[in-house]
Image (cartoon, rainbow, N blue to C red):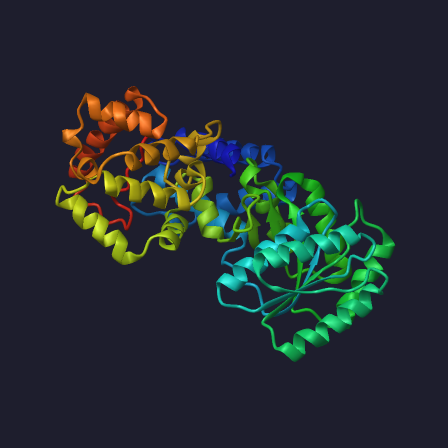
Length: 435
């Protein structure tokens, strides 16, 4: 996510290393590089221009003249302006009727299913309905993703008028006292007057608390142009950007708040039902600057491991009692957190280095298979594993003796590393990464 932008901006700031104090030439050169990075990332021209103007003013303002080094001073200034440009604070979804608009092919219907799933996990009640009568397949798609999310889907005949569907769904939503009614609207391959009139009529009928624009983050300036048109007709209150996991540039994310005046509410980060995250401007700014996103990483960890479990594992590690049972448990936790490249991209300084690297999850399955082929005694005390035991383990796990040797060496290396991490306070402080 945003690897190209991270690489370019980090490269611009790298040139500041060693500078003892700021001067106008140094600042101008840095700002020129950052401006070029923003434009290359397909950030709206006016947004990039205003960003650089504000950044220049901040750098030379009295309030920023502190004991910080030139590099830290500019990084802090860039961070603050990135947060502001990205929207400032996180913008939660208001309860009530949420109307989703966007062009066909942006992932709008799938996004509704993802968001419904997330809201249900957060203890909210959700009802969904589709008004896309021109495409019965779209209605069927929403029904399917709603069933996967475990939320109620209101089914109507495609022969029914879209506005009437919206009205009846609104009455059902009120009578059942749900927290949310997610209303999917018709998508088009391009904007037309008929679509806009239909959206305007639906909005007038149900008075939504939110009108959310769903856009493909990789469409760049086209997504902004479409957003402006939707905003003029129905008055958008927020946006959800899909395919952010594949967007290396981030032009739409950095432009939409300043260019359209609406906050980004959520971002799609994969194809699975769970692959949607609330949008936090400060966390995205940290990623862009190569500072990682430890808060999101901690939240993901907390979803798969309880505080008591984490403390128990850490306690064993600090006492030097880390065995292969613990290694298996840690690997299972890591796998449950999602693709490892995504998890590692949240670590400071790692994101941009992973842009061309795809980590094979199968390696973890092989390790677990080898550990499962060991006896309880072997897992607790790997030092007893001799050649004949290795041959048995390899045969039982469908691997080779060489694979078993590699695992045991990595295990010993991890034990050495753990001894150096005795002061580590992270809830996942000792998680071993077996590469």
